[in-house]
Every structure is written in structure tokens, then in C-alpha cells.
Image (tube, rainbow, N blue to C red):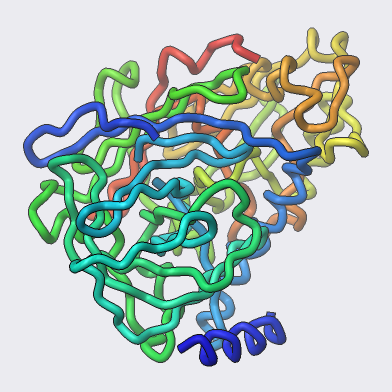
Length: 412
């Protein structure tokens, strides 16, 4: 098997925490922590653009029978500079692993940090598994094993990738993927046509939850590490949002339709200056920033006066320009979601953590790296989702948003 892995690696290279809060009936709600784990200056934009490129090209590769790629999502969690992390038990007795949380992919895997511990519940399927994320990848063997998300939320025979090689995942053990199941097609070898049920899929099938509905609550913060997130499987947590959740269908436009994709337009300020015309893109917990098409970012720069910052890779404005900054309005499913000026900026107390200075205000709206019209023209990442409660209803093929007590927070 190791020989196969090494051969596959060479071939591919040439082609390319917390404790659970609530467990009730047929649903489970778990907390997760936000942890910005910077080891030196991190170029967030570079990482996010690489991920965006990979999300676009993944589906093209599948359609042309090439080696595909993937991404990720997750439960109680910790944000690794740009991601949320969950503690998951695997095996019986369970070994705890710290896994990144990401709605952009659906494979669950470990071995980037702590090694996989084989127990009586471990079954080697004989398949290789490979997933690429733009800013990282892993290749290894597929096992079926028991996965414990909470004491009374134990999934049997869950597919687990056990990495022999993992790049780009320092400080974590792997990924817990709960995006659409179709994202797993093409990640196995030789069973390249097989779709792997996600932890959500298996939880429904095994009667642990009634529905595949997943609710996500993030909160903005200016701390490097804090437990401030929550994921609910099988239900939404109505204590985490205000008003009601407004749902919109998953977009029919490819490649955004393969993910938690939606249609939206963006305007700026009280005069409703168009920034991005109605188009398809995705919501994604694994992307830090709000990425928009290059032509849209040019318009955003014009109305804000922002300029590129060579140290951080982000757009920057002066404190005086920030005082004049107006809201962005995201039109999704006929509803308008306001991103206030404070929500458009990186937490100022953390400027130096990304290589910036206290002289400037850094914007979290950035260039996706391509012009609009490619079928994935924006990514509403973590910094957007921290201002709203979100829900992914895979059974009804829809995505929902609601305001929260943090929508208008001035944390930054």
C-alpha cells in the first residue's frame, strides 16, 4: 500500500474543542472555538485565492475525468488563523483529533498531526484517497471507523481518510467535511465513481438526527483564541439568531451549484452603487475573507478609495477614509443583508498579526482573482458568516441566513 501511495503521490504531483453543549433527541448542538494561529506573517488573501481557484477547477476536472480536488467544514471548534476547528473522537475507545471545519468539502480525514490509532472498529477499505484544497492537500488510505461528535452522537462506519502525506495543515490533524456529498466523487482510487456519505448523511441514515439540516453560528472577535462558535446537526438553534431564517435555493449555475452556492448581487452605500451584478458564488466557512470578482473589486476600490497593501495582501484605507466608509448590501433571495463598515474591516487590534501596522485599516473584501462570468464569482467567507446565522438544508437544496445580535456589532 505504501508503494501505491508513493506512486500516486508522484503521479498527482505531475498532474497537478471543546466540549459538546447540547444533545437532544434527534438533533445535536455543539460549540466550537475560534483560534487565530499565526506562525509568522500569513498572507490570507493568497491562501483564499488559491482555495477559490481550486474550488473552481475541481468540478472541471471531474467533468473531464481528471484527478479531482476538494475542500472542507465542521462541530465544537477553534479558528486556525483562518479556519474553525473541532475536536472529534475516532475509534473505540476514541482518540481525539483536532479537525478543521469547512463547508467547501465533504471528505473527513486525519493524520496531518496526530497519527491514526487503529482499534477494533477500524476497517481498511483498500482504497486510496486524495483531496486537494489549493493551499494544501492530503493523500492516504481510506478506513471506515466510529466517529464520536458527542457522547450520544456516535456515527458508525464513517469513511475516514488516513493521511500518509499532508501538506498545508500545520497545527491541526485534518478536516471534518460536511459539504454536499457529490464533492467526494473522484477522491477514491480505484473506486473513483463512488460518493462517500458525509458525517451528516450517515447521522441521518443511522437515525441520530431527523434531517440533514445544519445550522452554523459564528461571532466576530478581536481575540486570538475564543470559544464563540456553534454547529447544530438536525436542527437550527433559534437562540442564536434574531427574526427568522430566510431561505434561498442553491444556485443552478455551475460550478457554484456543486457547493453551498447561491445567487447574489452587492451594492454600496445609501446611493446603492452597484458593486457586483447578480451572479453565482458560494458561502464557505473554509475561506476567511469575502472574495468578489476582479471587476467588482475594482469598483469597490473606487468607491472606498482603498489601495492594495504589499505587506498584508489586503486592501487598506486610512482611519479618515474609514470614517466615511458606508455599508455593503448583499441581495440574496430577494432579501437585503447589510454589512456595516465595521464588518468590512479586519480587527484593528490584530493588524500586526497579519503583518500590518496601526497606521491603516485593512479591508476583508478582496479580489477572487478572476473576472465575473465564470460561474463562481464570489465567496462569502468566514468574515461574512460571522455577522449572520447560516443554515444549509441539503435535503431541500437550500441555504438560509438570519440576522444576529452581532450583525451590527462594532467589535473590529
